Image (spheres, rainbow, N blue to C red):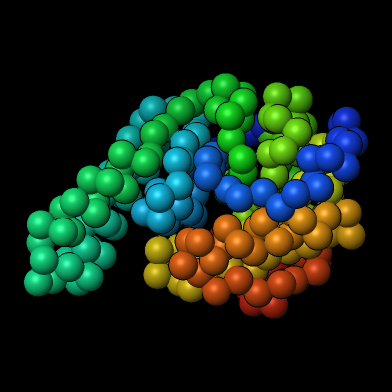
Length: 221
């Protein structure tokens, strides 16, 4: 399984999409630059976050990068209040844990955000597996910038609860997030992804599923 640089069809009942989901618990799959950045901003905005990758070595590097990023940000944001900055870092890191077991993580998560290698087969393998273990209410999202969201979603039975969340690098600083809706994405799922993006302090824009989004033109990350 390939996370930071590489792995994981019951059409669910309409009940799962009947109410807009308020995302509180987030699993980020992939501890690379993008995944770590997404985990950081989610934890910093009060979400319970689990960052997943295939080895503790990768995850330790990811967490060190997050800590360094937080220190840089708080040095500017809390220039006159260093104690408040230290408290902010402490609270953010308390919201963040790591794991090398994606299957165990999805049992209790509201949203899975995938940020692994740009390889359709690898992404399909990941989501096909996670789909078997995630609760019905769990929304799946991919941060892909070069693959069709619809083709990734096809590996699951929850196409109605599948969308794209395309962040930009560096994630903690870039305000834009493209929220991608496939023909199968339910309106409630789309609204939940838009609300989640706003809760992160981002400016979400709506996109229809396409290899080329509003920004980026299909660039790989």
